[in-house]
Image 1 (cartoon, rainbow, N blue to C red):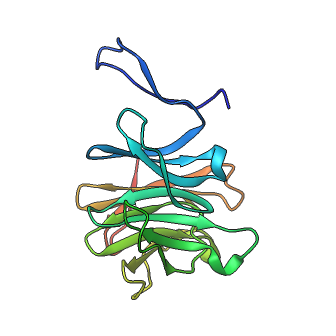
Image 2 (image 1 turned 90 degrees about the vertical axis):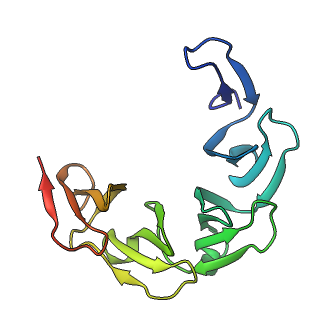
Length: 186
């Protein structure tokens, strides 16, 4: 309870003020609100005002890696008691319209680009997949397995591939958003 609190400060590091006085992970500023994972509340998603007031739970369960597209918050959810509830979910910032987008084992994170969600598919040896925000069109992107990190880099997708036990890096790669022309970055 005494770690990972959320603070704000001036750009020069002065004026530090505690905003959220509890374990806070995956925080994201949504205009005049802060979205975050509340570890004191079962790792559920919460929103609050920029000063920490008005705290409200918007999604139950172990919810993480939230990304906001201006309309919905997309996130990963794992439920140890109900495997069918695990996957890629979405909810409006006010907590309404929570629904599952796709039941996928996507533990490694998600990215949004246009109408697509990029995710690391743990059921296919950690390869990158793309699926529509509506849950249709599931498409493999990377041929490389055991991806542990991915990000958009300009108009490409950069990722790191690891050994099967994730103990070492095989390489860092850049490919098109469709997974074509992967080039190793050195």
